[in-house]
Image (cartoon, rainbow, N blue to C red; front, side, top):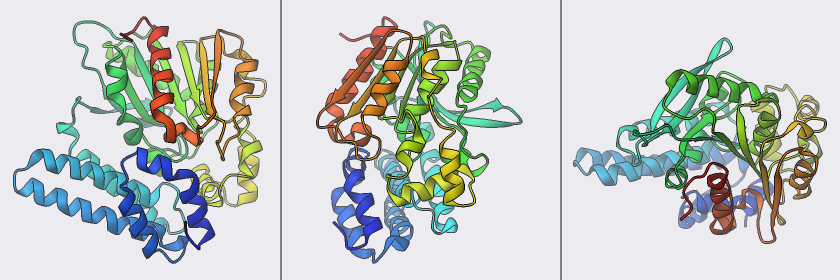
Length: 357
């Protein structure tokens, strides 16, 4: 797909996810044509995103709100492409992140279903999330969506309507080393502390049922979610999608650009140091502490995290558990989301007596 090996190793596994997440195929082809090497990735996607932002601004100035909202959301997705795994030029990387946030927040008041940006205390700082709760007549259960290495609360929250239709409120978060929080905090293995802070926040809000907290994490989030469920007893059900049992066992074979991104988000000074940090992200000796209902789902064609990792998590968990392997699925199951999403969503709904009919 490209003569540069780093661009090629990015496009091959991630193309289905790019298309699933709303990146236009034609724009991907044009962008690849303009890139001579991986060093061009961030700047080319910045330029592409700016074109969509310009369309959004013109639509807004012409009082075409619906078109403006759509174009700003597209621009936000393209700015995300500029930074999420591109770390060679930190000025470009940080510009992509900040512009993604800016474009998204310009339409936050117009999103349907409604989305509220929230902050909540975490140790000596704070965390950020996107929250949707249209249920005003009762206390609904809530599912906390956990990004991986390459996703953010914005990209995860785009699917919130599918959870809402099943009777669940939705919180998507940027934990340490994720999205805008990555500007202040590095990745941490002890994600249960993040989830504890989120549940404490819900207790203070009082508008969701804190006895029905669910987690859903994908990719590296598929490690974070089971890890949190093992230690945070207020979590009552957990889904891990395409997550590692032991990140260090996968780390040497993931794309080089993914290793570079993990180095940045973990705060490591070298790839050697990041190899050591990856060893802390393991469910060995921990998965057995998961006693709430657990579902892990994986694609057999996952080129980043072998499906056997998901199976190992389930094998060692102590509570009710289920493992689903989809033969055609790639990493994050973006190529067959029409099959994977109903499995995840209906399983979560069934755990809380939600809506499936």
